[in-house]
Image (cartoon, rainbow over all chains, first blue to last red; front, side, top):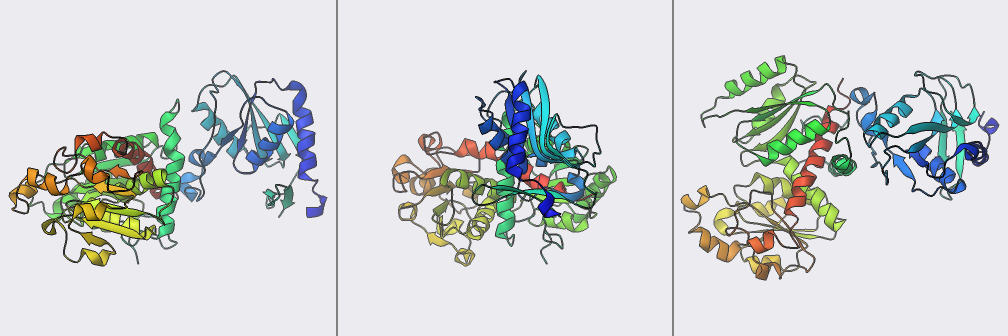
Length: 164
Length: 316
């Protein structure tokens, strides 16, 4: 199963190519911690964005906080720009239920009112629970509910997808 | 068994820093770091504690601590009710529990408790239902854990690490719940040298057993310090014949620019507030470039947010 997943770096190149034609130069790219931030970092470099890269940790916006508590490793969000009336490209590694994206959008709106938000994901694995769909996906898969797709980063910065 | 922790080692109440593992202290400080920028955003709130009711239960007057707890709770989107309960010194235990029971019947999720008697917050924590958390906001001479934590947060922000520091706590350690919480936190976080400086009458006997070095000469004690924490001298101590006069105290234990010059050049000066200018601290130091007394207040909000968020999560 693992071997059948495409190389993550190839997928990122494909994703960047899909995004490039419609990307305004002043678009703000925002990656969701942790995997989304890795993908966003690559896209940010490939698409030669002039604006600084943003990252979001959505721990304070999760809808399962009262059930499972705070994530033990919360990182500060970093949005080093004013997002009022700006176009945002929100980036995550894997789209599953859509709850993370919902939380990320809620957090973005606490920083201001963006003109638009589009969603780019490396893998759309299905299993959506909310009316949230990606504008760009590197790969669309139908993964059984009991399995998880993970993006990990090696010490040399190489990204790999795995399924378990 | 630490009554502050759940069976799986998570924070259940915050009553004292004594006995809390370093991992928990570090987790609180790290979480507070993430809350730091919430106060600077357009919407100064996160939805974490939406729908939770937090009661500020203050049996002893306080402005700063109560206000920062209130702001912290509101930034987490909790509903906050402030109760300032004037009490005589003869308050009976039963009366406190009656108050607590009534508030629990109004579906309280958390109590922030300040009380003049040591152990009051423990007493309430033992009594409440399992889904309710208690935060000690100062009990008698015993503990003031969130003050201790915000002091650690301040030190970490300015000094980066704990393992290479010399920290002095100066003044009325005997009556200070703040000093006790600071000493527990500093030693747990690995500060190699914690000093207490003060006249014999204002240092508790056996304070060395808490792992500190004792100085009665302020000039000797300040030499080489990275952090100087001044304690508030409560005026009523003068009447109790522990001290001759405020002037006399200032002469020997007030922090002046001359005395501060004995510490390291980049030493920071802290004070839990409210300050007695001209008694324990000279205005020139309090308002000077080494003072981090106002940042302490700002950090107090983020640290209290972290404590409340860690307590309220995973309880449903």
